[in-house]
Amino acid sequence: LMVGSTDKYLRFFKIDGEKNEKQHGILFNDMIISSADFVGRTLSQVLVAGRKPYFYTYDMRSGRSMKIPGLHGKGLKSHELMTVSPLGTKIAFAGVGGYVHIVCGIQKTIMFDVKMNTAARCMTFTDEDHLLTSGLDADVYVWDLRYQGRCLGKFPHDDGTCSSSIRYHPSGYMALGAESGVVSLYETSNSILSGLTNAMPVKIKSVMNLTMKINSLAFHPSGQ
Image (cartoon, rainbow, N blue to C red; front, side):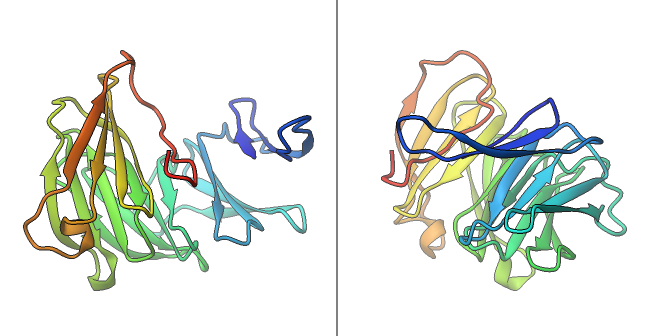
C-alpha cells in the first residue's frame, strides 16, 4: 500500500491483514503530495505529483527520486490531477481550459492533447488506448488515444452537479462521483466504450449515502 500525505512523505506498507507494517518512506521537501500512482504492473516506479510546475518519479528498487520538468510549452502550474494507464505506457494530466495532456509513461514527454468543452475534474484510463474524462458539465467524454485523441462520444451524468471522481473496472463497470456526493454505477460493455457508435452506458444504480464531494473512488480487484 502506498500513501502520499500533506506532510510531504510518501509511505509504503506491506499489507498482510495482521500487522500491515510500514516498509519505508521518502520525503519530498518541496512538494505537498496531492496524487501518486504506480507506473506499470512491475510496481517498481511511482509517479508523484502536486500543485507544482513539475512532478517526480520514485524508483522503489534503487530508492532514487527524479524531478521531471513541467510539460514543455504547456505552462502547467500544477500537475496534481493526473492518472496512469494500467500498463504505465501513458499518463494523463489535466490542464486548463478543458485540455488534458497525454504523456508517454516511459519517456515522460508530451504526446498530444485532447480538449473537453469545460474544465476537466477527473480522468481514468479503461486500457492503454482509451481515456474517460469528466468535469464541470458532468458529461463523460470517451477518447480513443490511438488516433491522436479522437473523441468517440460523450454521455451525460444526470446527477446534475460537477463530476469530481471517476474509475473504471476491466469487468465493464464505471463509477462516477459528483460534488453533490452522489456516486453512480454504470455498466459499459454494450456502449461506446466497447466500440459501438451511439449506444450509451447503462446506469445500474445511484448511491446517495454521502452528502459531501466525492474526492476519490477505487474498485477492488473483485469488482466491488
